[in-house]
Image (tube, rainbow, N blue to C red):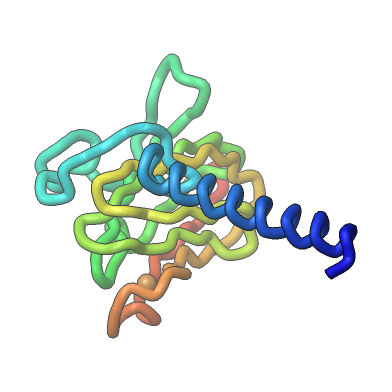
Length: 158
Ligand SMILES: [Cu+2]
């Protein structure tokens, strides 16, 4: 085998091994948390009893960087609340968790797209400044009722 060929092959092998080690270490050491999640955790069996998930829906808040908190409890195969009205122009912190398996959380035609994983709390801050009806849907296959999972977000005049 040619000398340069050998060097090239060993570089290729070495980078492959390096990438595998990085994936392995991050999986074991850091865990694989949903991208939109902070480091907030919750017992999936206690979701209905714990704040803020004991009161799903839109709540006005004071003294924070956002105007409302929108709390979603996600489970197979539904989003609670199933319909929300948001005053146009509001800055909303979406807070969501799952009671059972992994679900998706995509608000069509917006940049909101989260993974909802049991045990984790996912957040997303978004200003809704365009009036209209937005479909919230699950983009992570979660079982037989997956295709029916939805909620409607209505951005309305104040
Ligand atoms: Cu699903």
